[in-house]
Length: 247
Image (cartoon, rainbow, N blue to C red; front, side, top):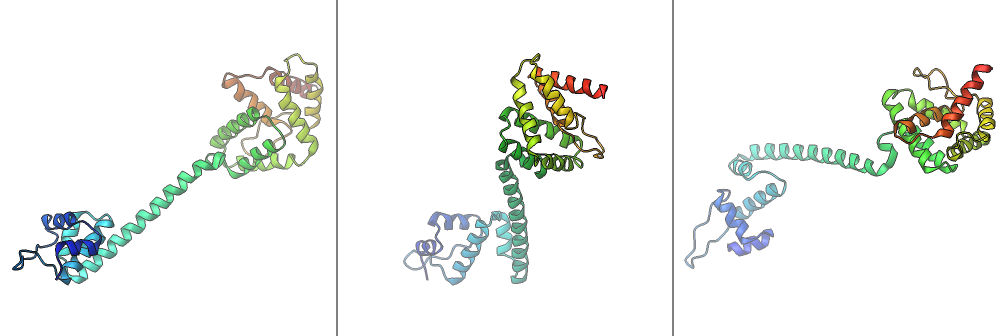
């Protein structure tokens, strides 16, 4: 027979915890022996192990009290039900962890993979951080409006960046953001843009490919909406459209 201290040490709990279980009616208090000590037998140890295990699993004490009075079959069925509930909780926690992990995934949290790859490509070729960020914001708005078409548009644009000439044209347009609106270089740049296919807004049905600097239109509009218009880009778009009308 064991004293309460020996039982508590064996279970890895405090004496106070064992007494708490007595107070809650989970475990009957054994009678005192002739020395005045309460002695615990093997059955009490088994019951305490069950109580502690269920408590560690998050089972409320009121439910544990019910289980202590259940038949072996009922106890086993209840334990299986508790295990199933824990499995569901684990699955939900894994889902939450996955969502939290996405927060460290950068743009992948709110953009299709095809667009993320494109934005990475823009950074690789040396596009300014401001332009990459503004283009990212533009793609977010497009993805919200045309979720089915955006991946295809992004793939089309990725393919265009395989052409070094297109890369250079895009970089030049990016650099042009710092030019004055009346900079004479914009005239030649407009010719280059139109030679590459000109400007055209993305087709909502996805039937038409994105041409040379379609995104420049969207980026310019986005810049204007955020209170940071780019005069040189606005002039470039006007020049491109004017040339398109005369051809």
